[in-house]
Length: 249
Length: 244
Image 1 (cartoon, chains in turn purple, green):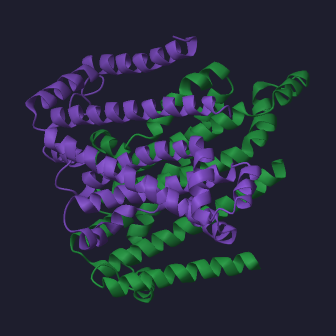
Image 2 (cartoon, rainbow over the protein chains, first blue to last red; image 1 turned 120 degrees about the horizontal axis):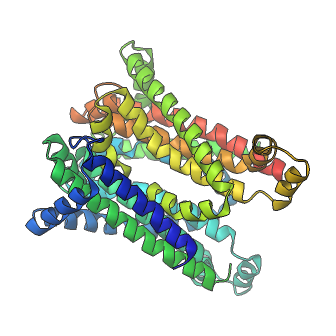
Image 3 (cartoon, rainbow over the protein chains, first blue to last red; image 1 turned 45 degrees about the vertical axis):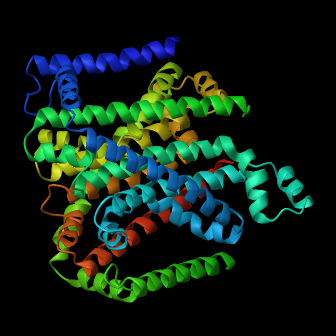
């Protein structure tokens, strides 16, 4: 392992150990924060009891659905916006301030549109993920070498054919960045929506445990979400770096 | 001129789409005209202002802490190559964590009320500000640091006269993102386990399915968020062009 990697492990490990010591010595009350080792014990207990299986599965399928819809939708919309420079210039400030809006407010609207249940949660995940993908598609298309675009027009390709056969392959490394962001944002959107207003799913289970003073289950599931998201993000981050290196940029 | 026209056309198209959605599903959302009228009525009603003030207060503190803390963290980590390399992946994974899962911990630490909202907004905003500041410092040309050494500047002088001015455009980009996510954090904080603030108004309206209030609140928040973001974007472009 590289020196930097080792140092990073030491920093994270040191943080966990410090937390453990502070909790064990009672500096941090048990009612506020469980020691990391206790969290792990509770996580194993919750997973072994298999009570959380349905909620975990539900959240994960919702995230996957939201990611797929965001990536396809975001690429299509991004490609469309990119082919109209005037539209692009006008829409840029709105895209940039998009993430300050509390999408959860649209939940009632989605319930009317998609019915009570998971459709509305997935829709919020898509709302979170899709704009990251649109922005990444725009940046990715900006970096396509001019000569490729000209070649496409020499071959008299239409906008759809040019997008699929020239722009898509050339922009893949940067599109992957959008894919990675869409995953992170879909997680945030789905879990947060479940936390605030759903009646099932991982986010709901955490807030349910919080409301019932069931700190053990709450911290166990919290640890599960943190570890899951960190591992998923780290895997895609590593894939992105390899992709960028292979493309030599 | 052409740009202004495009902007007007875009907003008009958005309003028409909104009106069409209203006609298609009148129970789900109110029309643009109704929403703006309701938003205006809310602004005029005295009951709304304590909530707005509560949110503004929480947001102001959270932004101050996020920007101050993020700059201190980012600048100090960015000055050293090793610390920056060690910290970057940690900060990126912290950024992509669904922070709402941590909200119960914050509520347990700070109790219900203003401090919890401030803390929750701060943990949203501090990381993007720190990441941008750190990378900005790493991208300052080495020759600038050498010049600072030749001129025998102290550490603080280097920071104030070389690092911060050199990194300013990137820092403003970070502030823009920090601003957005801090606002989002404060609002989410108010939507769960809170009795006051705009997020609470929204949540209460969602609870009783009061669509006009929901839409009016979104309109007000949208106006604030988009105009603040547009200002920061304008500043961002100006600084980047000045630097280039």
